[in-house]
Structure formats: C-alpha cells, structure tokens
Length: 347
Ligand code: NAD
Image (cartoon, rainbow, N blue to C red; front, side):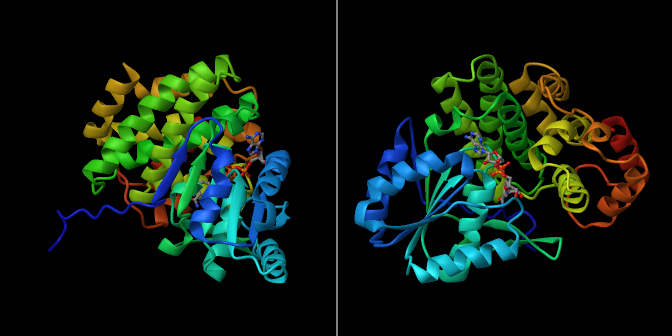
C-alpha cells in the first residue's frame, strides 16, 4: 500500500531574497524574539559577520569564526561551549555548507532558531540534513529540527567566490536537481523545482563565469541553487551523491570539486535508464545534457579528473564495490564492474 502516494515536505518557512537582503538579519532576529545572537561565520565572511554583529546592536552576543568541512564533533563542542557561556538564544550562520552545517549541529543540540545566510551554492540551508564526523567517520542524520527556519539569500555575498569555487559549487547544486529528476518517487513539486533549478544553473552559470561580478546573473544562479537545495531536501539521492560521499568521506577529496567532475559521467551512466529526466533535461539544455555539463566542468582551471585530485587507480575497485553494496535508489542498477568503468572514465 502507499507506493503511489508521494509525501512533499518543505523546509525554511521563510526565505528572503535579493541584493542587500543581509541588512534585514536584525529584523529577522527581532521577529524571532531573540536577545543574544551567536554568529557562526566562515573566515571568508569575517567582514560580513562584523557588519551583521554591528547591526544587531545589543542583540549580538559573540562570533564563532572557525567552522570546518564535514562538521567535526570537536569543533561543534567548542562552539557549543561558547554558545552556553554567552547564553546565546539564536544563531545566524554566514558562509558555505561548513558554517551552515555547524549552526545546524548547534541548533539540534540546543533548540536555538537559525537564520542561515549562504555564500556558496551548496544548498545545505534548504535541507534538514547534517553530515557530522567523529573519529574520521562521517555519518549523516535527517531531522526537521536541523533545517534553518529562515534563509537570507543575498547575491552580493556570492560576488567574492572565485572562478573555481563558483563553477564547482554551482555544479554541486546542479547534481541535487539532476538526481531529484530521476528519483521515481519525487513529487510533482520537486520535479518542477528540479527543472527550474537545472534551467537556471545551465543558463546563469556560463554568464557568471564570464562576468564574476555580474550581480544580476549571480542572483539568478543563487535562486536556482536555492531550488536545487530544496531538491536535495525533498528527493532521494542516487549513485552520484553516493560516489561523492564515499570519495569525500574516505579519501578526503574536496566536496564541490568531486561533484563537478563526476556529474557528467554519472549522467551518461544513468540518463538512458531515466527517460523522463533525460527528456526534461534535454529540453533545458537544448541538446545533450551530459555534454552541456561536461563542457561546463571543462571550464575548471583546477583538477578535472579523479587521478588529478589524487585518487590512486587502485582505489577505483574498492569505491565501486562500496557504492554497489550500499542501499539507495538509482535509475540503473548499480553493479560494481560497471561503476568501476564509470570511475575509470572519470579517473
Ligand atoms: P565550504 O562552506 O567549506 O566553503 C568552501 C571554502 O570557500 C571555505 O574556505 C569558505 O570560507 C570559502 N567561501 C565560502 N563562501 C565564499 C565566498 N562567497 N567567497 C569566497 N570564499 C568563500 O564549502 P561548501 O561547498 O559550501 O560546503 C561544503 C560542506 O557543506 C561539506 O561539509 C558538505 O558535506 C556540506 N553540505 C551539506 C549539505 C546538507 O544538506 N547537509 C548540503 C551541501 C553541502
């Protein structure tokens, strides 16, 4: 029973969007009735964090400025100690997935409300998901209490992203949309988000890469990344995210780069088995969607193969076996030998 019944859940009840939206953070804090705000900010957002702290006036308590990728529990413990010492009652996270992940880890431990101000396209602010690392092992949990209640998208905060991070982070977002489109249980609303996200990314990303300072194009790209993040929250992710999880978690390869270089390979592997997703993406890409993604990925100045990222050839078999053994939905059956071929092409 129930296999045709789709459940659609939405996170971030309140989303503010537009150039300068960061200046409204104090209003959002007032709305929440909070008195003592802990700001969690990436080092790259130190200046913005300082401005937000000043604008919060008496409602500002402290800043924790050292979030780390994959949310190690030791770092969370340090930030938690600061939150307790300052008697913080709300969180403002400013930065990419690492800053937002740390605020989620604090929120789920304390019940504090969160205002997330993302500065990359990773999409964590739109999800009730957190990956945490303890003793080198990354585990992922899902809990509605993790999702920030308020998200502030200010495209001006993305202007400082260099070419490489802009490209890889946007392709990370595109991967959320693509995998949502081939999840057979995704709701109609999620599919609509997926198409709009893919269209926005494929249209705006080349424009942004040509003019990194174009706020209008950045705003379009950020808006598409928001919807892609919602796809990540709402749909089940398949082979692509599984590969990124294993390669990132076990071999320490960088998160966004991995997504960027794997996506076209996984699309070539899976799209023939996902005709509906393939047709939607072909309309959006105006041709071969995997080719369009490969062309974008080739604009990366950094490593574009797994070998160049530092993965030894001997690791491919083990990675293929691990992703073939894990349970998750995928349009095409995940057979170790076929995944090893995919990885070899990406290597
Ligand atoms: P990140 O937050 O680690 O940021 C990468 C680097 O870019 C950092 O050095 C950061 O300071 C810098 N940076 C961020 N914004 C910048 C800007 N506007 N200009 C210049 N530099 C900037 O990287 P990320 O890719 O955003 O996030 C990756 C992390 O988020 C991983 O830990 C990943 O697991 C997690 N994540 C979680 C979810 C989820 O739903 N739980 C979703 C996506 C990513």
